Length: 517
Figure 1 (cartoon, helix red, strand yellow):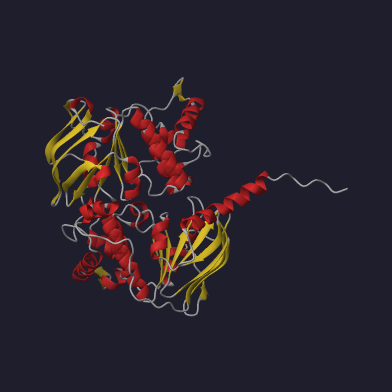
Figure 2 (cartoon, rainbow, N blue to C red; figure 1 turned 90 degrees about the horizontal axis):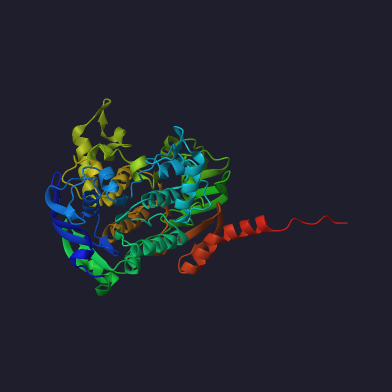
């Protein structure tokens, strides 16, 4: 696609942004109609800041923008959307207490006689949902009842309604199944045909190669390359992003697995998790794979006491002894930690400092006579900022100003201060760049060398295959198969993920038995 003037829909000139320190400097970029521009770089490189400036969520400190030939300086996200500039963020912009249909048309609800026209709203919602493969969901379902993956598809559907000339997709596939990813890519093809300019932010380099025509690479707030996508392979892109080469394999170091440290026996929660049993040894990384809705997050929440199990037991220790877990406080007391997938909603206080967030859950260690010891709090913060390589201006910087990957590091760092022998990780590298992922993989290896038992849920099969000693596959709420390292393939893991649904559908579709004479 040519970048000549008549095809340029939006241009960015000399744009920079400074918070406590510069996070973006002198960016020159243009977006072309009918083209996908891949935007990538490490966490903290400035990707989200640049996209928020384009989407009206942030005001640039320096520089200017032009949109469809006119000066462009949106004062809000709503103002940008009114002009046809839409953004699907990692942080979902949905109201959980409203239905899917109401969220889709919140600012344009059809009415009749002063009342919401529910029939028209439902029809319009069904049409919007079909575009992203959500036909199976009732548009009257509350958003709070959906999993994160389905919520993300609703957010994408919301932004495709009406006029859209520029669409920014920030890590859109982080929580999607393969089928949903294909649906998204089909929609991107349709949008390109309509002349929509798309900014596709992702760390999944194989996706960028599939959908993008050009790539822009940010490093430390500066644009280091804007080139045709075809000129780079994955290894070259990684080198551009992180300034160093990363191999395809990872050495987690010498590890010795011991006796079972965690034992889950016939854990059940109606409609979510069905009769799941497994054990994890000291020094082992046990992966849990499965499709969205298979029960992966729900299983971790049951072990952690965030949800109440209908039946089954959890045992911890050497040897594992059954423990009564009715709340997260019980779980922590028994040495179980959960690093949640929803770091913003459940893991962090975004308005508080890095030091304050790291102190959460570690108050006994930094308190004296019921008061927080400031020196102890800051020593803890400095220790974890260094250990986790958290990019920040200081330990007093607000967590809400950090990139997604650095926010995740804060969550993990908090738990490292506690002596939890069982650590449950739910999507630990979601929205994290390639370099930071390897930092976290190395951290997981160190935790196993300390004799901890790790359970890792991930939507990225290759990630699980890279770091895990065993992988259990959940399908339709059941643990259908467990694979040993070096005895699995990606195809076998995927087949197992679908197996429970295939069997369930076969039972549903089977003809009723005829009465015997």
